[in-house]
Length: 76
Length: 401
Image (cartoon, rainbow over the protein chains, first blue to last red):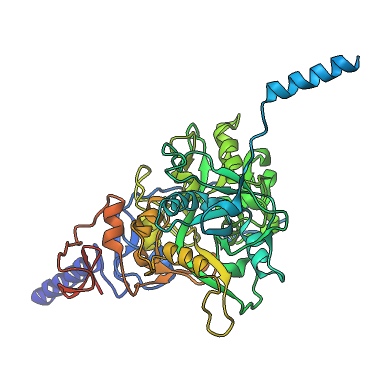
């Protein structure tokens, strides 16, 4: 019983290690400082969010007219 | 009394001096008549100077107008004419001190006018006219980025597509601080590539773009630079104009496109000229320059060999006689990105980007010219088109193919 418990704890710990940290899945996503970028982009969204050494600027704009769904309203 | 009037008139004539006859455009050697977007004037002035000094010389005689007006003019039947005072640049013999940063000269076109031989659109022609014209060839050239510029005294450094949608789509009612006053939005008319490209990228119908519509890029530049409320000022500019004006009181905002996580400038840093982010897709607001000329409807060969020669120079195609200068260098030095240096492509204005591998890449040469050579670029001395390290030697660098 004790040995089984130890094995289960060890297995759970191994799963935890694999699940955390930087991942490299099929899209080549990389997480750096909370921002995901793509190392091997293929689609439009991946291209514009590809990893780069260029200077990037972060901004959280205030948009009072944005719809509750996050969509843009129609133009007047 | 009569004698007094005569003496006065005589004095006036003496004060004004003899009338200076303006140059007749037709007297210039080997003219090519062009109608171009004003964002392309820096390129045409520099190329024009070089061609005036070439052997044999060619004179680029041009007017500036909106891209869609230019397309309409060459699509028209009969083709549009240049029938007023046109612009040209002097040869070194005429003025060795002149540089492309100096004003153009003016020449007089014959009263009967001259057919437009080359028209320029600084965006996809389909944004202006989707009708089929087999008698006009569309030759896609280097790409130009478009920026949103603010005064250097503005605290703003970036803008998102969503913000710009509200700023330019809602104007005074947009509630996007600090750009909430249309009197400080410096914009262009709906026939100009600068407005049309931004409208397409922001998903705003062109006729709904708000702001003070200024006929020329120069007026937008002046308006932004001299705006009495710098924090609220923002204007639309082509990068060819912006790059020549970095010593003026304007700076480009980094732009975050729809679905993008971070904002980027066209260049890798605010002081670079490398257009890194245009080349690899991080900066999405760019359009191709397109050069139009009459062609044989069947063979698609231009009917005007001299016009074809000029277009091929801009497109960096082989020409005969080979020029004694590098047309590619002229394109690059004016802030345009030749297709051979691009890593992404699109087929419609503001459309999705896709990966692109040019048939004859020049990325390393481009990077060398803009002082941002990547470490992966290796020089080759085996001569152009010779194999090297799994690729091909092009312009002194081993490219992928």
